[in-house]
Length: 157
Image (cartoon, rainbow, N blue to C red; front, side, top):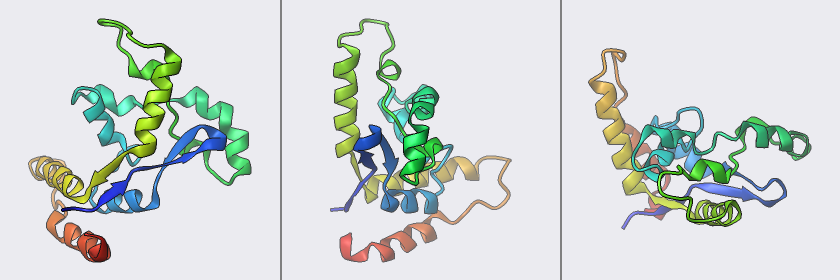
C-alpha cells in the first residue's frame, strides 16, 4: 500500500490553502507543476476536463487577502481560495447554495490526500505526452525521479 500525501495546508486566518511542502516537493520532482502545484488535480474534479485547471482562479479573493497574507509572510499570489462560483456550471442546477458549496469544497481540500502510487502514475502518463511531443528533445527519465522520491520517503512507503 502506498503512502498518502496530504495535498493542502489550510490557513484559517486567510480562509485559503497552500500546497503542503511534501506535496510540492513531489510534484515538482515529477514535473507535474503548472501555474500552481495542484492544477492537474482540478481536471479530475471537473469531469476530467481542462476547465478544471481553473478551480483556484480566485484573483479578486487573493487581492482582498493580500495585506494579511504579507503580514503572515505569505505571497498572496500563492494562495488557493475556494470560490463557490467556480464549482457550478448551471447546466442542471445549481443544487446547493454558494455557502454550502464553499463549506463542502473547503472540507474536501482540507482532507485531500493522494497516494504516491497515483502521483507516480500521473507522472508516467504526463511523461508519455512529453516524450511524444516535438517540443521536448530530451524528456526527463521519470523512473529515476520516482526512485528518488521512493528513497526519500522510503520509511513511509
